[in-house]
Image 1 (tube, one colour):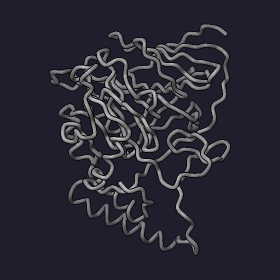
Image 2: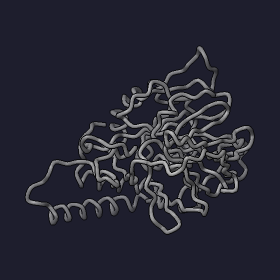
Image 3: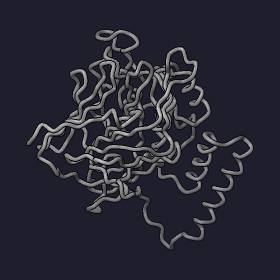
Length: 363
């Protein structure tokens, strides 16, 4: 996928195409695409300034108004010319797969349950990162596709459930399935056994971009960003927030005042984040599924807890995601959108906030 700045015609057409693949019908395709194409053309002519400035990425707003990375919020010396390409990689979290690789370098990780109440990750990386080993890479589930769609991400996985594969076939997902594109993956035969031995790298993921662009003709990615600021510790208390997954997969997020970060502990594995969001949504089991595969509602809104700067909200705040292509966003009890700390974010997806408890170890 060449790194070029898409013009309004290019972006309008491809937004229409992706929208049709998710929600439209063949009859509506030309109506949607043609309407958006014509509208953007008219607006462009009317609004065109006398001198067109060099194109730059719309940076996320920040408290200091400094240019920031659109995915991490880190301060940049100058705005980026293009949005980075994002890769969403399915990484398993079964005990047989520990220790995991690369997950600590993802700018965003979303964790949700799969069958057996075992959690699984979608870990997000960008094409300006260099990660030598990511995995073990495992199979797709349909709800992760909606989170991947927020970034128009290239979706890395090894096969998938019938529901996920059916959705991939029709919803416009930029699919990178190891079953058919194995050259972008490799197996660690020395230290792992199947199915816990498939890995990839950011270098391999970047190599896939030209093939993906040729297959899907999507052009440069278009996605929204959060509002970022530099975090500042508001507490010297060491709090630990416990998430009860059960089945040996409980999680502890412990605050570190010295670095203003949170350390995740599970099964002897530790990861660090600058923001931890716990969202509650409807989680069930697919009727009649002999594997007990789960359903997870991704669209709409629900209650949430934010761990940030050594504090957490005592009354539920709200997460919202209006469509598959829209970013998940977070709002406090006054309805104001939350400003995220620059750095890494983890989102934990649970069925109820009753699974979450916080204890203080004192100063």
